[in-house]
Length: 191
Image 1 (cartoon, rainbow, N blue to C red):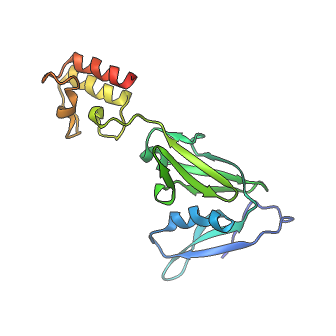
Image 2 (image 1 turned 30 degrees about the vertical axis):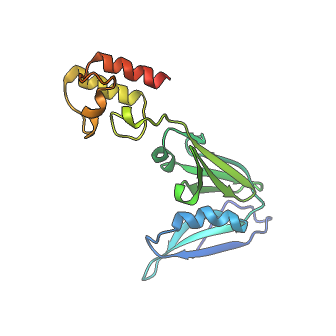
Image 3 (image 1 turned 90 degrees about the horizontal axis):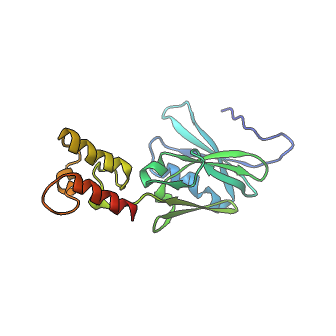
């Protein structure tokens, strides 16, 4: 097996290799839990054997100097959006690691998710308004896309795929779906 990293040869580091069975649960947890042991995730690959084993590579670390996400922000509109991103961590020696974002390996407190990395605590925040009573498109968030969904229905009469739409669309509760519901939805989103 060959491994190349962007670590200058003058820097002595210990490299740890962890073998993982294909599709084994806990792959992300191994990566995210490495900080508890003073290790930083370097990358992964596989050993071309039968059966094929995936390899996770870790190195010793003095701690991370900076952490950001692939979108450049630590605030996300939803948990689903957050978990599609990854963390970009640069340690104090300039070595960059890329970590998955997985809420099952994080501590949740309301809309905040905390992850303990080597020498650094990272908090990711969900800032999207969560109001299931006006989630017209069924994405778990209340926002402009829900207003667009209701507007499209008012203009075309075509019912969106969200099974709850007809029940939710009567925002003001007058048993009619019309522009007054759109106005009521705008007021709720604004508050």
